[in-house]
Length: 149
Image 1 (tube, one colour):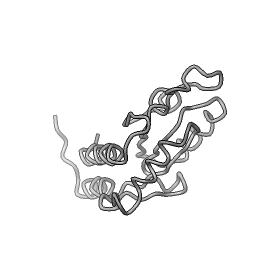
Image 2: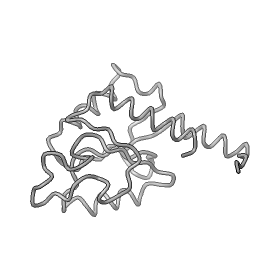
Image 3: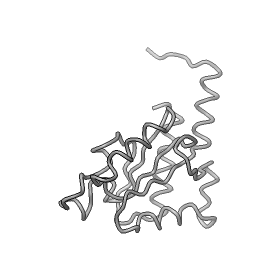
Image 4: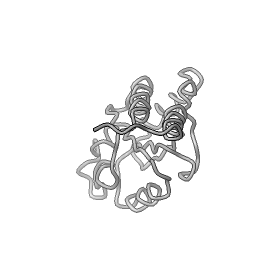
């Protein structure tokens, strides 16, 4: 059974899909994914055409983009930032370290990927992933938001 959305619900869904504001959360690692994510935000790739804006506060963000593995030291901080982000919120794991722990997986202080601490909506694998892959992943997330999933 399919429920019809009200006009205000359709407008809110449209607005969320047209302007995802992201928060970049670096949990450690080699910073390769951070460099590629910042490169994707430059005018060369022009992600603002999708309405994507970088925000510095979790209270103003819709999407948390996590790079690096989750360590024992960062576990509670990541959970706190996730809790501070207003609903609906989405989490994107960028790079092999954020997806599974990567090359740091068996280290004494590494718990693993982001999904060990908070739920992840989208995985962008690679070591490091190219800016084009990051943009494609965020575009897929925007489509998912527009469909209301």
